Image (cartoon, rainbow, N blue to C red; front, side, top):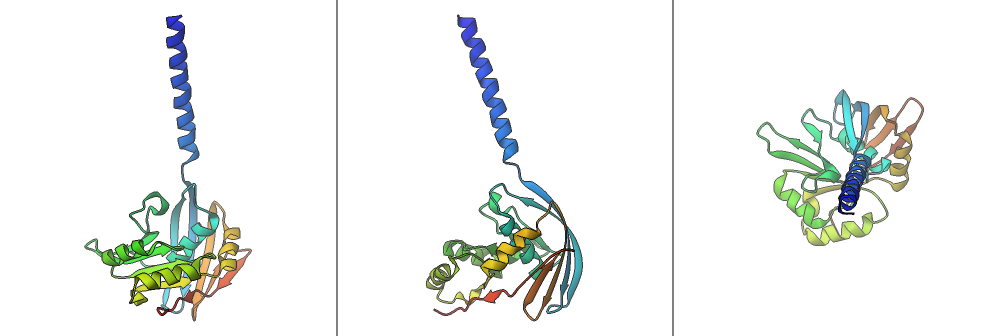
Length: 204
């Protein structure tokens, strides 16, 4: 009986180990290969970027596409994606100078004002691309926390447009982003989503 008990215990441990391995595999990020062409007429920036983007298991297509929008809006040879949802100490994207100092910190959604305060102490510039129904209420909390909210550059992406961006998603994407007079066009060979990010005023 004892040997049977040991055998059952070992089998149970093996089963649990396999289950944990399956769970670990299920939680792996999904990798997307993207060729992003940018024609930013407003900034005079024209380039094509081959990008590899990892989508966290809890991240939606909408949010991943907004990360690409953020990259396109602030594209620079030193701008890079961070660990995002996988690391709470990092933004979605950042730009560092040659010494490693953070020049630009980019957040998505409606981050806690305390997080933005911390970011403003680490980066020369903090930008938020906000989206979703909670944006108006969130912005009021930011204004209350920052008497001089001008140090935070916040832009609202129209909810309808952010949802439409999700339909452009594919495991391998060729995207073209055109920016002119504040308007943004994100296009594939078959579809285009156009919108204007709205600057949130730094007054109550």
